[in-house]
Length: 252
Image (tube, rainbow, N blue to C red; front, top):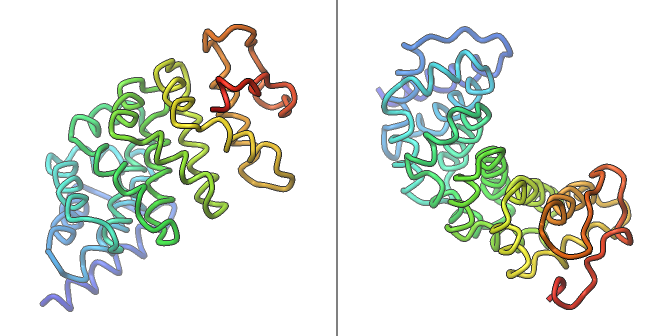
């Protein structure tokens, strides 16, 4: 029986990867059921299929419309990290958060704290990068989510990731960029945890793919920060020497 269900989950995952995959409430219900079979090989493929579907707006609406989607995802996150299922569930949440109106619902479902905890996992597993993407999506234009991520320790953990693998650091910087947007408390937190210095280091590294993302974080950090001597910057044009961020109080 489980072998048959596993085959079904794999087929649905393959079909869901098609850009115009047909989806209805019955398919969503089936995938949620397959995800909830503990210790079964069906779960990662079912979650992967659901994550793929959530890249489409219509399917995203259907997935969020199922009453048990978020409770199930949070329950699965609570089982801990290190499994393929966890990474796929994070992808589901990340893709749901692409829709602005869903971001508050995800926070209210208590998904943010377990996501932030995953940032301390092995950066090479793929889970950390997916989590950084999810937090970036959740924090975009949403002050309450920005605050919740900070309160869960997300800013300090993202800063630590700036020193690891290039792709992970790139996603961490992009998440920090959104967390700094219009949030003075988060800007102070970035400074307090020593986040400015590693961002400047990335900004000054030639040929570094996270160079632009570091610049965007610093741009949001100095913009409307209330710090004397700061001015508005064009995020796409400034260079490291243009930022007056070399004082001991900033780089400490």
